Length: 243
Ligand code: ADP
Image (tube, rainbow, N blue to C red; front, side, top):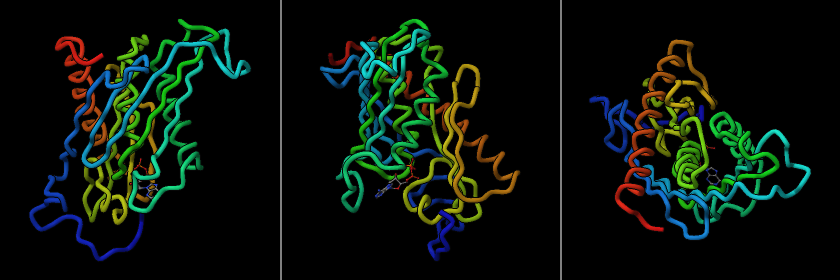
């Protein structure tokens, strides 16, 4: 981010490297209930991102000291597979995955009715199988579907999408080259029913006006993601999906 580059990210016709319009999202598809062992699960493809989310619980809280009499403890684990990126990624937790896990957990804490399950925990595991920019948004979007698939009561799902700046344009849902050579990335997550913002980060620099445009665009992206989330749940529960 913020790197100087000679790459032209937007052509004269306003098209992006992958042919998308400025406000166009990469193709997104989600399938609910893909794992036998998990209480709820989802598989998601968003452009070249591939993620799988698995939810377990509510179940006994271990370690015990993490248990709360006021509600269930959410434990969100974002993990990138070693084969998910060009160079092999060193397996296991690092600062980035710890940060993403923490903020995603906080976002979901705003919608899950944790107070219904005191002293328990709910584990949300997301594995990134293939990474191509925007994985934190992809992971959170999949995790919400997996939570719903597990039958965990929520106020609403959380829907997530990023906007950013490529060349001189504010664009929706940065691809990998746009992420690498663009000027800013603004991942966001909302509660679609209320419009409440439950995650907002920014990397790079934007003018206040550009930031507002990015927020508006990212909100639209979240709403598009939300439609796909609902579609995935309907397909499973109406169409008699797997499991
Ligand atoms: P996000 O995936 O949410 O956009 P970042 O902005 O941190 O998060 O990362 C952008 C992209 O950079 C990732 O989607 C991935 O393709 C790549 N990336 C992240 N971490 C690594 C890593 N350790 N090794 C190689 N590529 C990585």
